[in-house]
Amino acid sequence: MPIMQVEHISHSYLGPAGKLEVLNDISFQVQRQEFICIVGPSGCGKSTLLRLMGGLITPTRGQVYLSSQPLSGPRQHIGVVFQKANLMPWRTAQDNVLLPLELAGVPRQAARQRALELLKLVGLEGFEASYPHTLSGGMEQRVAIARALAHDPEILLLDEPFGALDAMTRERMSLELLRIWEASRKTIVMVTHSITEAVFLADRVIALGSQPGRVHAIFDIPLQRPRDLGLQYGMLFGELAGQVRAAIG
Image (cartoon, rainbow, N blue to C red; front, side):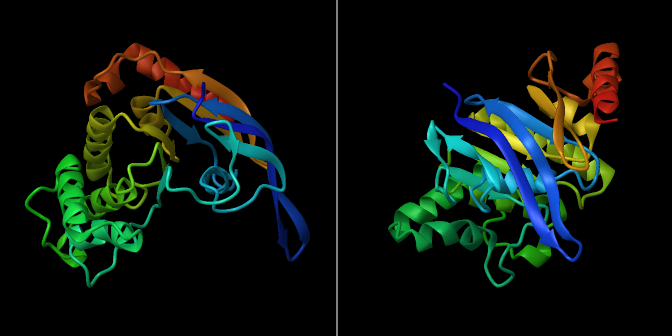
């Protein structure tokens, strides 16, 4: 049984010129422990789709289901990470991860232990007492991922989490994300502008077209795991990236 079903989702915004349809009749399923990437041109509604999947906004038409139940708002079972880490600058890395646990009333000792475990999972052991301004962009995003995992969600939604990073840091973060995914076995759906990044990370890539956003194609990515950056120089990788690029148009 899929963990999430997106069924005939359409979404519109009311703008100065009237109603603007951003997404049109989007349907797909997400399997448990799957890694899916969503790609498409700017303005095709990728981020809107992810917010719909997170229950942060309500679709104009259609329905999102989480474990076969209609999704009507945010759930603890869904963790969300945005392009900006949005960490509280006056709180340490550990205290930023602690925040959702504090709000949920988790006992302090148990919450602190959970935060320490998550910071170790994302490779930040030893940086628990560091403040955001002392961390690199990639490290800040790892704190944000740890915070999103605090409630042990079933599915993690990532909206361009590496978009503000330089190319070398972005490659390292892709490897870190794969390590975190392999260790936690969470279901991940990630929006990215990078076709190369999508093919490298995903089990399946969903290619959207624009005006309004529609599913043009869904690609299985039959690359071996675990993956390393050398895969990107192989013939199969190049063929897959070319097919995704052509589907986006």
